[in-house]
Image 1 (cartoon, rainbow, N blue to C red):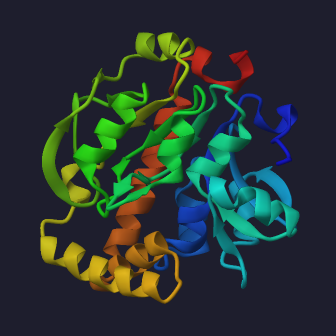
Image 2 (cartoon, rainbow, N blue to C red):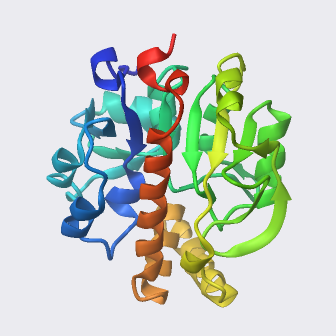
Amino acid sequence: MVPQVTESKITGRVLVETALLGCGLPSVSNQTLYEEWPKTKRINLVWLQGGRIVSGPIEKFLDLRREAGWARVDARRLDTAVAEQANGYLTASAVMKLTAGKLIPVVTGGMGGVRQDTISADLVYLTKSPALLIASAPKDSVDLAGTVAYLREKGVLVLGVGQEYCDGFLFSREKVWLDRAYSPDIIMSSVKLRAGCVIFNPLPPGLRFNEQSLLEKALEYSYEASRRGQDFHPAVNHALDRLTGGRASVAQLEGLIANVKFALSLPPMACAENST
């Protein structure tokens, strides 16, 4: 059985997945991450260390960031990783699994989605319980319209911050309409949902890239890396980082931090200390 994040660790906190920070932003230094990170004790990052779930502040996480041999662990791999006493950076789906249906804000950057015949664990665990996920958008490597359609079909509430549509993550795409724009009263009602709620907090236009050829090159590299047994999404991030001279990593970090700040602004009913 997967160990749960204890009540003392999750009470009153926003939880942040660590897969992006641990293995997805090669040009972002620990110093930059520490300086940019919001200075509040209400934020905990969540990772796996020696098979034990650890939830802690940015200072504790940075001591371990980019340690050799650490894997990217999603919800599907979590049981095995715990049993093997592994070290790993947890994805959003793994953190949602650990919150066991509590309406605690879980923060990521670009979330997983529908890609060819693959359904991301992020989508699966949003359908299992009333999880609350804050993301910038589905990753550019997935089918945006298919991802939103999957969530809607499964009863997941899909909202946008300041807009009723999603039009991409790092790259602008065709608009896909969501259920509605975010408002605090909608979050209150989501407590009653059997499935989860995802809120897309889009990157500002100035952080996005217009050169679609960059994405095409990154995807080509990443599919080849995947055939060699490497994780697909970190490969995309590393390719985009190289192709943009580090700008893609900076943009993703700014987006993640914006999502953390948004999660901190959510009404009390959406936070752990008032969850039931």
